Length: 180
View 1 (cartoon, rainbow, N blue to C red):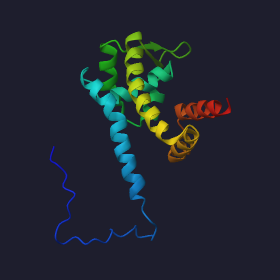
View 2: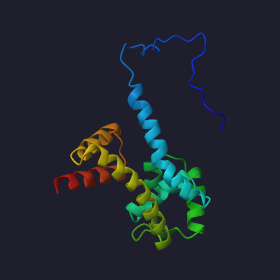
View 3: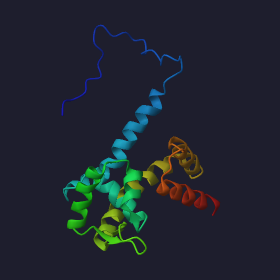
């Protein structure tokens, strides 16, 4: 991968690039912080997953299957917003290698319900541990009272019009945690 050169060319000025055509101010500071935070947040698990021949799609599938046992394949497609073909490739590998098992629904035999195996649970726990360490370190620099502000900010970043059942469950569990 080529290095990025941040030096300005001779025709660049020291003036910032113009804001959006609506005249609003663009939040380059937050945008870039989110890019770098995401890069590092997923980078820790990426290194672990590479040893298994897995990528981020595997991580995302494993995360939601572990967190929501019995998740329907259709709901997983909705929450991940990926195609059947993309999920099929990843899911097949996770099934074949014993990280996930698939069961038919009790009431509807056409349903495919997904569960993490003990092997899959161990992997998710390891990846979540890496991410929790990063989160804990960042929150320690801010102070315990700021964790709620961070959660409110992240919830506000998510499209609330999304009909995902899993997302509704996440909001419900986060709200329940806040009450306790």
